[in-house]
Image (tube, rainbow, N blue to C red; front, side, top):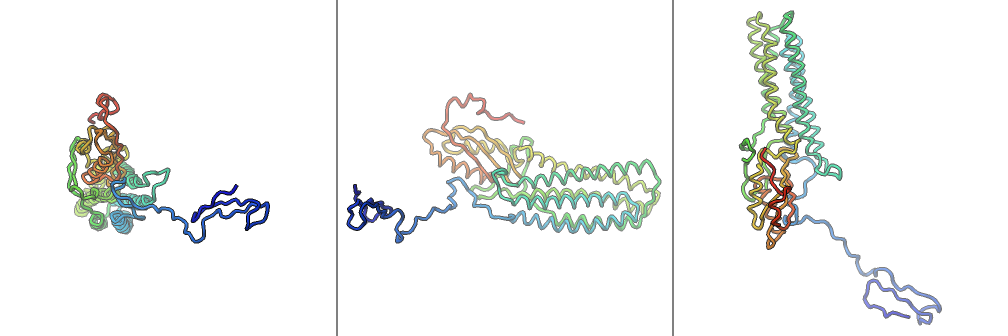
Amino acid sequence: MEPSPTTGGSETTRLVGPRDRGGAGGSLRLKSLFTEASEPLPEEPKPTEMSFHHCHRDPLPQPGLTPERMQAQRQLCTACAVCCVFMAGEVVGGYLAHSLAIMTDAAHLLADVGSMMGSLFSLWLSTRPATRTMTFGWHRSETLGALASVVSLWMVTGILLYLAFIRLLHSDYHIEGGAMLLTASIAVCANLLMAFVLHQAGPPHSHGSSGAEYAPLEEGSGESLPLGNTSVRAAFVHVLGDLLQSLGVLIASILIYFKPQYKAADPISTFLFSICALGSTAPTLRDVLRVLMEGTPRSVGFEPVRDTLLSVPGVRATHELHLWSLTFTHYVASAHLAIDSAADPEAVLAEATSRLHSRFGFSSCTLQVEQYQPEMAQCLRCQEPPQA
């Protein structure tokens, strides 16, 4: 049996009988099992970045820190260096002046150093790519760094409040007014310098009690909401609290310098301005807890997002709408879209994703498109969540 050879084929196997004219008798000869040398091997398709309508609107993320986070890193490094220098000066000045208020300010600067170093570490950690275990990457480490900053301030302030209370009970202490005044003046300048370094402006946007108000971007802008970096914001609020306390310590030092008998102003100022410093952390703590509890971003409302999805041509209903954020600048959304039978699912998906990105700045949108069924109106799982 001898199959007819295929001319020009790249893979041809030919069995030659025992009486083949060109071969030895009783043998089998393999003519060809592999591709001819003259023919190139087919190249494997290389992964390329698809257009927006495929599923990804944003280009592939570049390795390393983004420009916004690089700026945050520079701000934190500069502020941390300034903080270390002036903290050492306050420790020496507070010891020489025997002032608890000065030592309180130095302790707050120590908390600043620790929190900013933690924030720098979290910024570095957030650049690590996503894995099969950490599918969202390490973005939320930045939020954890902000939480550590707030908690450290609360702990240090609690200790100093206790020491101030002990001083009010026992008046056996002496304060050097001159050294306290000089050190307090330097502390005010240091906190002003750090506040200037860490200051960053954000876009004006309102926060209604129901969370329904938001700051829409221009249609098709394709840029996320330029809110400030979480770690820098937490450090800035931290420094503002220290600046307020430094001003109080400066006022107390002036009073003690001219009226030494009013030395009780030292622990009293520690009481008053430590409480103010604790209050200044409330907004940051509230926002951090909102992120960690998977709450809706403050600048994005549930109703506006729902109405935007329902305004897409072909969408009859939406359910399973979830909005959350990994950080204050990284918003995520997922939803089910029930569409008409005549609607094009690909067109609906592309339009809905584009509107969510351009109007609200979502970094990631996961939308499931399905046919609308009348029984969805009575389905309990398809109902909207109640108003909080």
